[in-house]
Image (cartoon, rainbow, N blue to C red; front, top):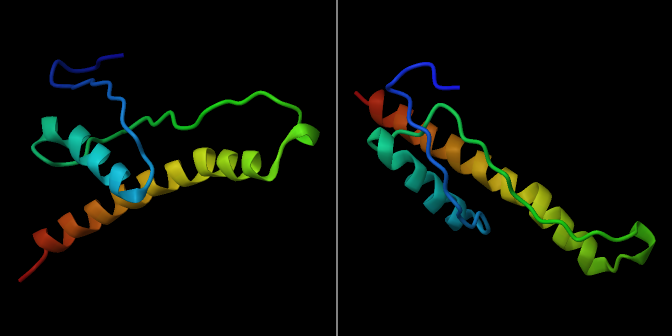
Length: 93
């Protein structure tokens, strides 16, 4: 729900694998804010491959972890890395 006319809502579709793609995605979503990261980013990452666990192959498990864990981890890592760099730039003497 929009609280202020100044709020910006955007929708993007972007690869988040590997970390360089997560960086590019965050830089893209930061553009409307003059390069600053938005207050909130909702990432819907992953994919679905319905099957029974006993039918899975090793690669199915690896792919599932890649799509569930690493995509989210890279996005969070990039956000924190950029925030830390911004903080360091603002606090240099």
